[in-house]
Length: 125
Image (cartoon, rainbow, N blue to C red; front, top):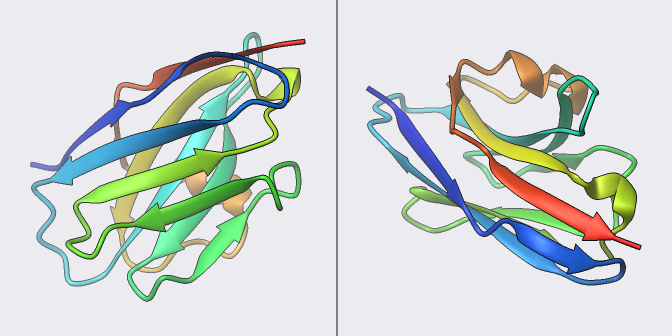
C-alpha cells in the first residue's frame, strides 16, 4: 500500500521561503508521476507542480520561477522548494502520486490517486 507523508509547512512572511518534503513508500510500479497540489482556504484543489521518473517537471503558471519540484535519487522523497512566497500561496499542500505518466496539464494532478495528509503553509503580508 502506498503511503505519502508531508512535512515542512509553516508560517512565513511574504517574500520568504519554505521547503516541503514528502516521503513515499510502498510504490511498486515501474513508472509513476508525483506532484504537489494545494487547497487555498475556501477554494478547490489546484495542481502546483509535477515530476516524472525521467525528471521532467511542469508547473502551474502562478508558481513558475518561484517554486521548484525535485525528487531524490532513490525516488523516495519528493520536495517542493518555495521561494518568493505570496499571501495567495496560503493553502494546505498535498503530495500525491500515481502510476504512469504525469498529465500534460498540472490542473489534472488533482486526479492522482494516492495522497498524503497535507501540510499547512501560511504566508502573511
